[in-house]
Length: 264
Ligand SMILES: Nc1ncnc2c1ncn2[C@@H]1O[C@H](COP(=O)(O)OP(=O)(O)OP(=O)(O)O)[C@@H](O)[C@H]1O
Ligand SMILES: [Mg+2]
Image 1 (cartoon, rainbow, N blue to C red):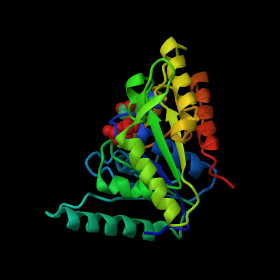
Image 2 (cartoon, rainbow, N blue to C red; image 1 turned 90 degrees about the horizontal axis):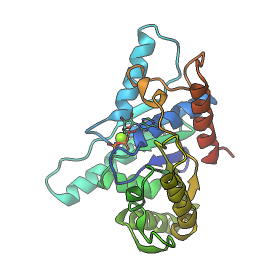
Image 3 (spheres, rainbow, N blue to C red; image 1 turned 180 degrees about the vertical axis):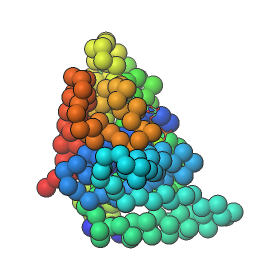
Image 4 (cartoon, helix red, strand yellow; image 1 turned 90 degrees about the vertical axis):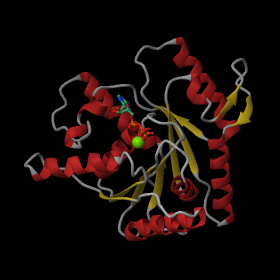
């Protein structure tokens, strides 16, 4: 598979509910907000969170809500062929068709993966120019990256997920592409500056060189990141921000996008 044109941003990890779809929507709207053309591919055909979000956005606009910018979007469902080999061939064909449809027309393609290991998700990881992995604020979530000593943060063993990212990297370099930028962000951070919060921060700081990701600040736990779902909006879409918390939320989203280093 080849995708030379649009920059491919993949939201992935193998843990449910860490904030991939929420982050995906905010990255999409943040990119639209600065005039970029964006397409979205939802690989989570069970939940279809991002696709539903975007349908809500479309409906909101059609029903006379404020005019909002829209990305192109499609859902690529997992093949249901009975043989593994056939499923893989079909998954590959369907994902490639989705990429081909958009890659010449947009600046960015954002792919939202499900919170479990699927062949489609692996294919997307192998193609990612930027991989964004959200983690929640807990040592349990660090297991997603590897088994880590709690005293000196040495990595005792890489997780299956990190191994998979490693394989994706090898695949990319074998096909002559520039290295993937793997960005780990913490999401749903508690606003209290707790000791746990600090320890997870220290652990990620220590791990980034060893596991080869970039650790950048993410999003706090805020109602505004979820309450606009029914209208398919984000805090970046609201014309008048009514509280300091909204101002901070916008700032958080914008700095996250800046930290993804997507603009040349
Ligand atoms: N920063 C945040 N602040 C408040 N709520 C959040 C935040 N990020 C995510 N949530 C909420 O947490 C829940 C899980 O988020 P989300 O669906 O984005 O995770 P996910 O990683 O895509 O899950 P899955 O693996 O099941 O696809 C949702 O109810 C969402 O609204
Ligand atoms: Mg999701």
